[in-house]
Image (cartoon, rainbow, N blue to C red; front, side):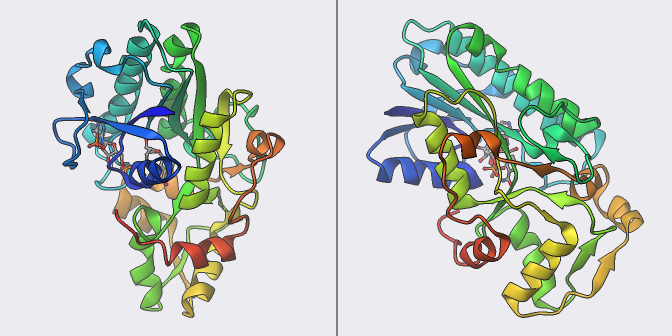
Length: 302
Ligand SMILES: NC(=O)c1ccc[n+]([C@@H]2O[C@H](COP(=O)([O-])OP(=O)(O)OC[C@H]3O[C@@H](n4cnc5c(N)ncnc54)[C@H](OP(=O)(O)O)[C@@H]3O)[C@@H](O)[C@H]2O)c1
């Protein structure tokens, strides 16, 4: 396949580029002026609405991963607007451009997130579950809806509802590991909230799977078949690192430390990867212990 990827310099994108190239695909990057990549790519500037459709003709597949990182900065009103607008604006721009092409791609896979479901306790959430409430859930719903022009243009659209990606290369794990290594690890808030997680290699495998399987379209939960509560995750990480984890970070402290981002770490989403499973996808890391053992060695190239 000739594949175009936005957000190719990120945690998922960098690994996806390598996997697709290793699989013999012809990979091109959609790069912003700020992108930290020396590779030759196709330029776009989603913040100012710049994308020349002539430059994206003739791809077989497009994967859209670009968006302001949700955990790099405290969630001020301004930062929340950046998180939301960078996703909805860029997706609208790309989806409309793809729909206008003489030779559009067969498939457009767009990142989405477990945040779509909001805070849902221990309810099992397959792809048919309705969206939740709150900033992340409402923004993620709009982000998915922004792929509409591509679907209306006859392109197969897959909305990848990704869980927390586990890898020591970036994202959540390297933030919490130093604390756990010092023996100060502990659950967040009640610890009863479910976290839907996926190893980075399974997130990449599922994305490639979605590109290759014509029967998959619409939302696809990209998360392991065994989501864990925050308490279970805490015990599993402590076990893997051989450290104790006896502490609890109270909810009020989380709110002070993280502003609106506390919504993400205390929300409960227990996703079921029903569409991946029924289409025959096999997880390399279906349980948290094997995923953590693998993730701690996956520090490559990000
Ligand atoms: N990692 C996770 O645990 C996780 C979980 C659920 C969903 N997701 C979603 O999956 C996608 C990829 O995740 P990731 O972890 O790879 O993200 P990431 O490491 O933060 O990378 C995202 C990429 O987006 C581009 N970007 C950064 N700021 C941007 C902005 N303001 N506007 C437009 N593009 C911007 C950058 O690429 P360029 O500079 O090359 O454009 C960056 O490398 C994101 O949309 C994320 O929300 C991730």
